[in-house]
Amino acid sequence: EVQLVESGGGLVQPGGSLRLSCAASGFTFSTYWMAWVRHAPGKGLEWVANLNKDESEKHYVGSVKGRFTISRDNAKSSLYLQMNNLRADDTAVYYCVTYRIMAAITDWGQGTLVTVS
Amino acid sequence: EIVLTQSPGTLSLSPGERATLSCRASQSISSSQLAWYQQKPGQTPRLLIYGTSTRATGIPDRFSGSGSGTDFTLTISRLEPEDFAVYYCQHHGSSFGQGTKLEIK
Image 1 (cartoon, helix red, strand yellow):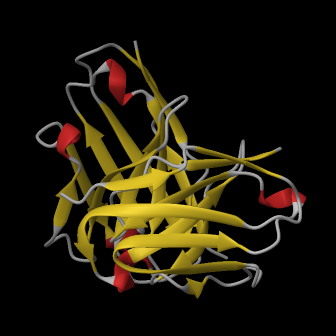
Image 2 (cartoon, rainbow over the protein chains, first blue to last red):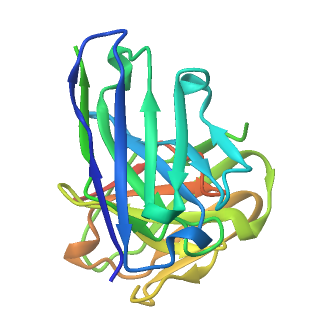
C-alpha cells in the first residue's frame, strides 16, 4: 500500500522559513515523479512544484519561484519542500503527491498545515 | 502557462440526474495530459479520469471523460448521493482548474 506521510508544517511569521518532508513507502519511490500540491482555506487546489526521479527537472508555480525549492532523497524515499520568505497567501494544507500514472496524481498524503501569520 | 477554466462554478442537481462538467484550456493541449479529480469535504482528492477518458482503478462506469484540443468534459450519467463533491480538472500533472462544486438540489 502506498503511503505518503508529510511533516514539518506549523505556524510561522511572514518572511520566515519552513522545511516540509514527506516519507514515502509502498512503491518504488526512485522511479516516479513527485510533487507538492496545496489547498488554501476556501480555495481550490494549487499545484506548487514537481520534480523527476533524478532531480534533473524541477518545475514551480510562478508565485513560489525563487522562494521554494523542491528536492528528494531517493535513498531515504523522501521528498522535501524548502519554503523561504513565506507570505500570508502561502497558508494552506500542503500535500505530498506522486504520479504513478503519466500526468496524473495517483496518491496523496494526508497533508500538513502551514500557517503564515 | 496553460490556464484551465471550469464551468459552471456550482452545479445543483438531484440524484439520478446527469451531470456535465466543463474544463476549457487557454490553448490546445494533448488529450493524454488531462485528468479529473473528485474531492469530498475532509478528504484528499481522488483520481477519477486520466488521459481525458480513461477511468482510474475502481471508478464506476457512470463517470466518463471526453474532449480534445481546448474543451474537455466530465460526465456523470446518473448521480448517486456520494457523487456530490468538488471536481477539478488538471493539465499535465500541474495546473488545476478552479473547481466545480456539485451540490444536491
